[in-house]
Amino acid sequence: MNERFKLVIKMKNFIFYLDDILINYPKREYILKDAIMRDSLKVLELIYEANSSIDRNNYLDKISSKLSMLDFYFEKSYRNKYISKKVFDKVIFELTTIMKMLYGWIKYDRSKV
Image (cartoon, rainbow, N blue to C red; front, side):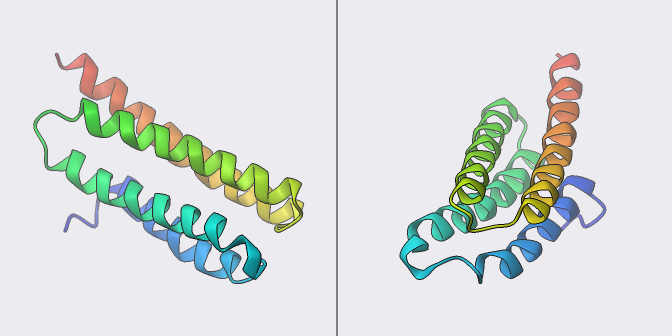
């Protein structure tokens, strides 16, 4: 697909980074691990769908809510000491960057109307 689309590249790199992080989660937290990976993959899927859709607003709103949930999952992970402060800061930085790119897309898309 369109590999020059910066948001897709950023999200893919985030998902690849998650593979390394989620290995260290305790087995009893498989639901949290699954939710993180599932929502991350869903965000990537929604980005592709929004990019090829005429009416993007619904997709962009869903992406925003999924990213907010990912933020919560990582906050929970940090509070329960499943990830270090360094990893938490890096993940939150990456999520914030993705959110900024998304908000730029939303602002551009809504200004066209």
